[in-house]
Length: 332
Image 1: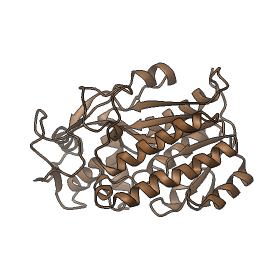
Image 2: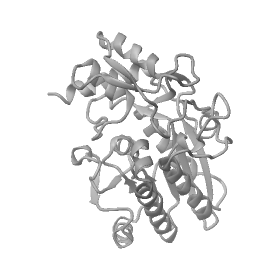
Image 3: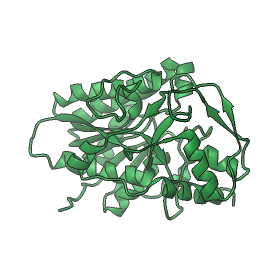
Image 4: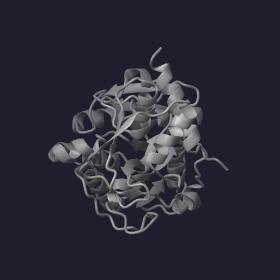
């Protein structure tokens, strides 16, 4: 049985890449997303499935007004900065924007008796992998300020559970792809993610790709990552909301779930696959390692399969095809 999601749902960062896909999935499921976004990183053209509340999650008075006006029972929190390299250069900025501001939102959720709070976390909280596949039981040991900011929010949700808040932290691996219908997709500025950068290089839309680090302890020396389609991620958010709302216990809780494919691909393998699918090679050069990067991040997704009944259905080839179609459409 598929339970209905109560209206409305507050989606912070809903004008961003993953947030806009979550809003579309909510609307298609019969829910009513309310996008809360500063539009500093998001795009107004991506707000297509509900109202836009333009403001900052760190503005307590604004957040209280949004709660009074919309009375959401569900919050999906995706707002935050996401660039690892930038976080190393500006750690305090990331800890303030991602962690301190999130605590303001969490406090508002507790005061307003929110029944389900889903947080956009990251596999980067695990730091340097101690096993081939990372499970949720792996130690939390972030090695960059971006990951540390996300781990801080998870700790705040642990504390809020003692006051009745039900929450889930979704630890993404590498989000990729775009909406199959071509309505929304990745449009970061600057762009730092592998697939759009490599696709743009193959299409001649930017300079050759730089492979950051070719001397890692991996089969071909480049980083190994786990890639998951953004539409599959959006689906997982809805499943997490339903899981939280329909737990038998009436007390608060906080659980973490890995969201990935369970399969790792090296940067060089992804470059080769893009060249094959695009029909033209990806121009690329070797560069130094980036501060804060782990050699390998591949997830064990057994818990999400078991508890959320979630399994990604769009593999790397589909992710590349959708990215190619989206990047080409952006040039029209």
